[in-house]
Length: 157
Image 1 (cartoon, rainbow, N blue to C red):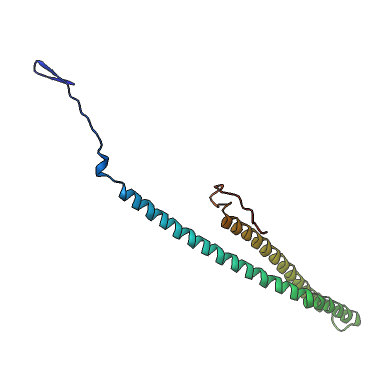
Image 2: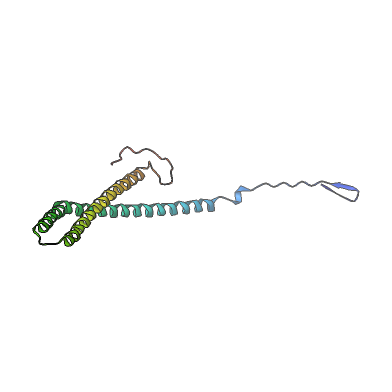
């Protein structure tokens, strides 16, 4: 609206989009590229999770084997060593200071055994948790982003 001299002026502007010129091909191509990129990222994450799961399982097996070996031979050896040490002290073969030093070494070995057992349990629990997450992701019922997807009927725990 405005005026020029003695006349009043009015103006109207009309804009009509012409969809014929924009077929949306570029948006479709961009969406496809994003989908391909997301699929590649998902495959990489799944491979990484699978490798991590296998490494965790191997670590658990190694810790468990060490624990079993210790329970078979090491624990009895410590008990026998403590008995021998006590007999040597009672027989006068060693003094009290040497007895206490060697006894401390035996206690250190037992402490290491307890730590090994704790590490094996932690590794076992971690492996179970990873397997659960992996299985749930494979069957589509779980997402680390918190989205709820379908339900899984074949979950093996």
